[in-house]
Image (tube, rainbow, N blue to C red):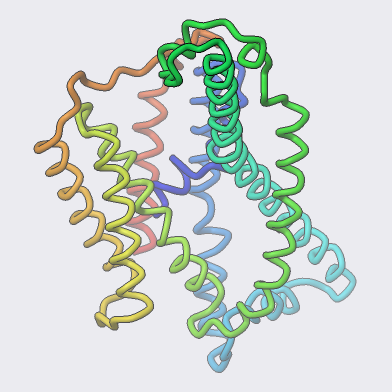
Length: 309
């Protein structure tokens, strides 16, 4: 789940996609990894202290305000609340931007383009009927013929931005109506969020992982694997009690889905291996010291695990 969040999560990856070149992107990821390694000092250690200080808390959401009241003077309460409020809004805004980007570019824009092609095809068929030609027009015919409707760009940037803003408003309102019910989560807010995230984060990571290790698995495998993972995970969390922790269920489904996708790739492989297309809009020369810093970060991660185990 952490590999998904830091390697493929849209509102994390979206930040590095704005880099001026590949080297800057890799340096930014290295800095983010260093910040992630400091998180045990900021989260885990205070949590362990809280376990020993507050032994009768029924709601884990009360730990932070109680810890804050012990280590900070009363006049700092407003300042700390402002920091938490700002941090929450930063994360929320990033999530809004990434969700609207995914919706507009992967759902709405392709739908508009498909609708425009259908309009062009209907227009050409009508003209062909008026001229007494054959009423069937194929996609190849559309690409060869020149038509004023086809030359008009049906998707403008201003229109996409307007739709993205409306989508963000809808997401905000939905979140506002759902948020009060999170208080009823039995195992705490964090566990609830991670359990819900399991519906999409691990299956997406599984698809990307298979895409990295093989080049002949077809798109059909990704679609089938995504459906298989979500249905099985939903069944274990909503209908059938397996007795296993949800993280164990996610790991088992990761292995099963990976094997399922590889089997589809074996039975129905792509005719030609996938090859990444580079548009050369930015400098894609990698950071020359990336391997050194990657090894140092991995060593640091292992040392943290050993020290805090």
